[in-house]
Image (tube, rainbow over all chains, first blue to last red):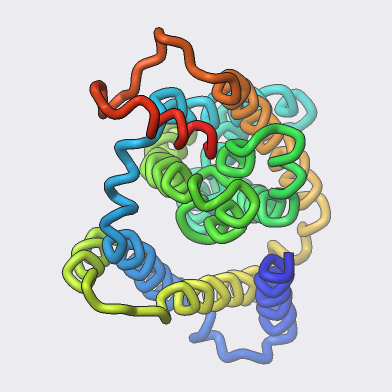
Length: 199
Length: 105
């Protein structure tokens, strides 16, 4: 919980500093966040490779759990389709937004390119909120919906940003499920987002 | 990321303790940068309320949907597996150790 609040406060500080132009424009260039993202992926990869036991554990994943990314995709689409009747955007557009699975940077950029800034912004906010929801409510999700729930909710973020909270709430045994699911979801984001944008 | 996996594997015999802190710090920097981008974009700031509401509803629906399907997947796992369930990779693995893993799963 403390960790989530620190993360949120960094985001809020960024918004305020950007709003009042206290930071030179060059800082907010997307290039820099791309390099930081690369560094992040490198260190996530490093910490996986650094523990060969973790890779061995991939084989211990129960066959049912291998379907977790699939059920996450199906569940997300079902939820988005239900609420799509309330909004002026088409179901395909909203499915593209939902296909971000919490990967806000990539889905926001992709959707802005294909469908314009407005839907891109919705994609960004939706997927930030999905991540924040996971960070804040992971303990409740485990209690009410089982230990796979925060991994499903985290979508593509479960091997980086929401990974620590999942390990803490679901347990250390779930770290490999979390990485597996995040890995598969991560790969699916660019394909599914592009698919629904072209529909 | 693959470069990281390989590097980490090559360094597996060394004790390195800073990596988790390092990852957390990088996440802080990334979210700070994202906040900067959102705050600087006037178009997004102006429409924030209406776009935010739509985003909130979609996020809630998407999250709830995926959680519910995860529960469907999770429920049978809590019961002890019957003979018909197979393990994907290790078909002739030690059954007892797997049952123990499942118990902790």
